[in-house]
Image (cartoon, rainbow, N blue to C red):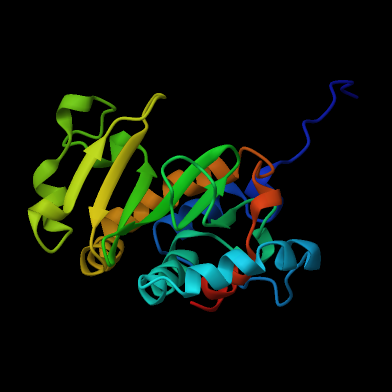
Length: 220
C-alpha cells in the first residue's frame, strides 16, 4: 500500500470533475445547481447600505441586468459556489472606484464602472484566447475579432496586467457589453479563465461579498 498522502480536492473539483468542467466551458452540458444558498446574514446586513447607494445611481438598472447575465452564463453552479469560490463586491473602496467587482481566489474576474451616466466594464481573461494563433504573445492580439464583438470599434480596448497569459479587455457601453457577452468565443474564454481561478481554492474576498447584489446574479 502506498504511504504517499493524497492531495485534498480543492476548488470546483469538489463538485465537478475536469471533464464536466470542460463540457460546461464548451456549452455542451449544464448541471443542476444547489436549491439553497449558504448565506451569512451578517454580511447581508453589513453591505445593505452600499447596495441602497448603488440603487440610487443612474447606472443601477444596467449594472444589475448585466450582472444577471454574467452570473448565469459565466460562473459554474453559482449558488453552490457562492462566496466561497466567487464573490461580488458593491462599491468597493479601491482607488479605481468601481460600482461592482466579481472575484475568485485572489483574482479579479469582472468589474463594472460608471462612465458618465452609462457604464464601462473590465474583463480579465487568458491572453491566448484572444490572439490570432492562440499563443500568449502580446503582439498577436486578434483586434478585428474584438472589434466585431462590440457595437463600434471605439467601444473596446485592452491592456496587459501582470502575469503570464493574462489579458484585460475594456468594453464601454451597456449595448456593447451585452453584445460582447453574447459571443460564443468570448463566453468560452471567460468561462475558461473563471474556472481556472475557481479551481485554485477558496475565494480570498469572502468578507466583501454583497448578497444583495448576488441576488441579481443568481436570478439572472
